[in-house]
Image 1 (tube, helix red, strand yellow):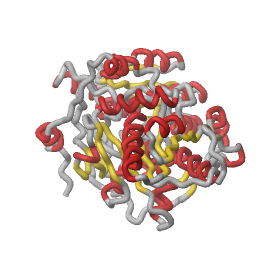
Image 2: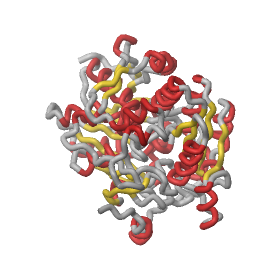
Image 3: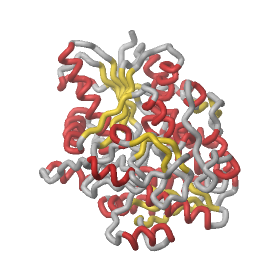
Length: 455
């Protein structure tokens, strides 16, 4: 077996030149998105009014296994890819576990996260189509930052609707986006009909990703030569993020390794879907029996406590309906929730895999997440994003199980990015002010009561 360094980078000739479309190997496909007006499956033509034409095509393509990455995207990928595969030797040592722990670190870019992988692709296709402006939403700010970088690179105007709670908690994220030339609006806002309606019902509404999506889509469809882009959930996003898993798998093969466990944080599904893609392919094709674990916050538990049903992707109920695990499009995480991953639903692809038993899911409280984040930072020298720290929490838990059983399992988890804009949350944890919020069954029932009725 090859000696494993702390950090391993793929040689340039091994960097992926194609994305992998997981849907091409699924035994059963996710149910199609529905047009909310006709309740019929959406068409490529209908989606092209919201998304760029090539992205609309990718969204509905269930059969093309590998998609060539255009040279214009590869050129920008080369600025920050490949990302390192890191053996967590120090963490293993402090845990006293026989387990081998690897993490794929996606924070080596200004956005500090994996989001740039899809932001570049979406901005590139907009530029190729001649689109002059884009709109989007962002929660914790990583996606908005990544898309701001990409739009600046390709010369496209960008408006970002940022969840108001995060907007207030992370003012420096706003500054970074504005530095790249983006316009940032706290959502819900008075700039759109959807925002005004939400504020009329609840003037103190702290916002949600569903709300921000409503505003961004409204502006996109009412502005000439403008399109909407999304940083998670969608099939096209999981396709672009497959570079994470493809790089990780090739690197592990070169090191003579293969994971027994693959663990990722789960909000809308972009990081998790990208990380697991080629390993899940092996499982679907009967080559391996790897265990996959999606880790979500206990305060926004779409997989573990949500319902598998058709729901709107936004609070304003103007987007297509998706069959997914959902808490209801009107669900809002508690304002004290500091760890990101605050979307009400989960990627239809990941929802289907979870529903069919190919993947497990756990929900963790944020104080336990920050305990893991602090331990990791002290021993691996990277301050992790709160979102990433959900995966770290369960990776530690699984490594400790190996300590009890004596099993030397190989664990791979995703470190989606850095936490340098999350000082308010870290300060709250360090000073003992952070507490956990777990919605009651009654809270969830109220949100789920308004799911659309599908015949």
